[in-house]
Length: 117
Image (cartoon, rainbow, N blue to C red; front, side, top):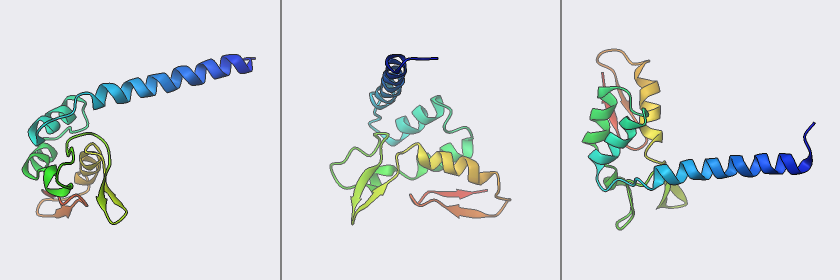
């Protein structure tokens, strides 16, 4: 049986590990779309060449307010009480979606990223 103090220590350790993981990822902020795609490939978020091609073709900077950091892996406000998802979310969804597409089909991601099979 663990004591409340041990439970608190475990919780704090878990919290520190989660924050550390976020800082390690966020500290590698990309300064351009291609670098962001390469980073997403490095972390195996982008697995297929088709999704990488789509992500490289449509630059995220087109969908964020001027002066924002479009390649920072975090959701960001885009106005009207809405946000654009963090960059890793789009290829994650496209990777899952492409498995259900057949040759000739097309899909449109909410971030306006086309995938054509």
